[in-house]
Image (cartoon, rainbow, N blue to C red):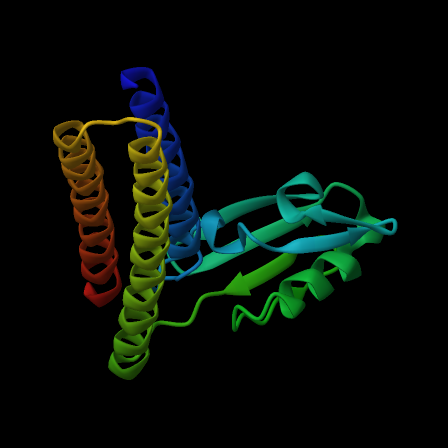
Length: 187
């Protein structure tokens, strides 16, 4: 029985790690007014008919604190890269100089900062919901073990362990959201 419980805990931790990785990825896309290549992380480009991540089709660099440059590996791909950035709905307007794209990151207004914090908190809440769903699945698995002969005490201990893992992951979510809020609100 202990082996089965450890397997349930491991599966639960793995599912929560995936949820946390997804949150971290989503938070990277919320820009804080500073130019970082991670802003373009989720951008996909049509590379000769194949949807390809931007980083595999172009070099993304920071020119200064408010400017990104995107230089495609092939000059013919310049328009496709521009189209991919515009279609990503990041609110960025790339300028084409014939060799590369130059993207100016506008400074954020107070309104926009508050909006981005709300967006970050919503992403955090989505992650917490995913963690709670994972908890429900883990508890359902524990209850199935009870039907297979798991003692009442072991079941209570297992439920407590699942809740401890849930609490730890929820605390991580809070830490990530607080850090993002601080980053966004810092001028």
